[in-house]
Image 1 (tube, each protein chain N blue to C red):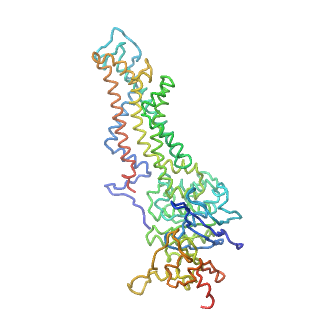
Image 2: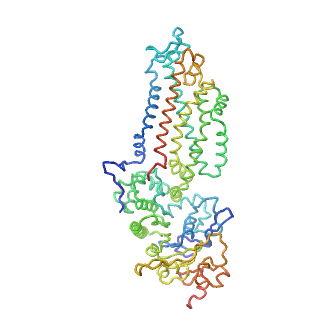
Image 3: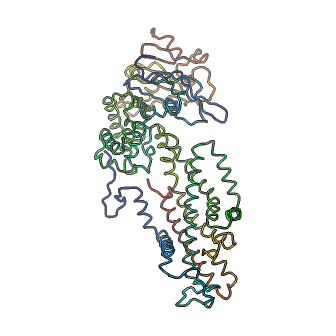
Length: 296
Length: 329
């Protein structure tokens, strides 16, 4: 009997982990750029979640006497043209920006997965669905989002909807591509032989085996959405003042960039760090999930 | 046909779409599988063995293949024309299948328990706990040691032989009446092959199911089957009980297959090979499709395609000269 490898060696070549996903997690945890990315993202997320605890100042409270104070002990990031604390606004802005990024990544991921699997499984739906995706993809994402937010009115919800629509096609293509491979594998045929229905095959057998590239894509969509939201807010069709988002803090600081550089610098740093962290996270995820790097 | 036949295949003809139109993959395949029978189907790669098996459950790609003629009768129904719903109930419950490559036949993201339970839940509506218990029993039945621990593992932790056992466990989960095993041992090494064949044989006796074993390995067929169907270029060329076929094959192709088996003793002489190669499905050949490779080819062979003729109660051969002279030679 060919007994499977019960790894015992101290080198731990094959780790005795009870489940496959734990192995993936272990490899992720050991991945350097994933570690850095995760730290950055967690740091920002914690800062956003605990914003009220960290500052205790109302982000909209104006103190006209304290306009344009440079960074100091009282105001680590300085104050803006209305005398509002920039640190507080950056922290509250992080809540809005990260929330938009997260929701867009999840929604576009879910929609993309469903559309992609449907297109792969039902060949008759393939052409219409994918041509629709192509049509959406043919617009630059930011332009499409700009149009949709303009039509829906400048609100946070419309930014989320617009960016979701803009990023669904990429996800759908990715899932369709891997689902087309997976649906031809023996275990899908085996499920059909066992009497499974199309829906069951799609969502139990094909989808779980096709989503790992989508997970990577979702981390990048998360980063792109933060950037895109900043751009939309900067252009004035995104999140509206006085609600702070990284984009509209920068937009408000633009007119005083030469006198009060700190108003633009800190939300800009937030965007950069979030984008950097998510990209590193995505790289790590890709390295671990890429089937070409997987052994057996 | 006969009262005891479980599945009755009649004139099954399947075509595939190619760039040049429809190509016939198998033509006029007719045979019965009796209750509890043990049929071996043997032939070269591309002779239509797997297509026959998949067609029995209407499992090939929609759109790129079609049934030109024929029927597959099971339980008073024609499976080729039954509604998809009926077919789904029959697949897995009444007729199950095991594939060649155990490495890719299990879903990597589900545990063994999940995959065995799936069949049980689909057809018998058992609870999760009961399904898990049953899964352990099935793993025991296919002789996987330490079943209660193995059942929660993922497929990548199992060796090829173990995975094939799991595939068999899944296949027999609902006690099917027919198990189609499509080259179940080809991807395994020889010692594991023997174990799997022995397992299949025991299970057949234990569960009283019919087994249709597809293989290109005559040794496997000789050891396992009671009746052998030889296929060549999409057609049945000979159908006989295993002892008759191995002792006195009638079709020149079967003779060639027997001659090309290496003998245990007899030195290291050059192995016999049937000259030529299996023709493409749409290659135009007048008359008998084995004609160009046949050592005994006659003018009559090229005049008309030979019919599958019964030369005894249980023996059928597709060869014009051999069936014409049958009984006299």
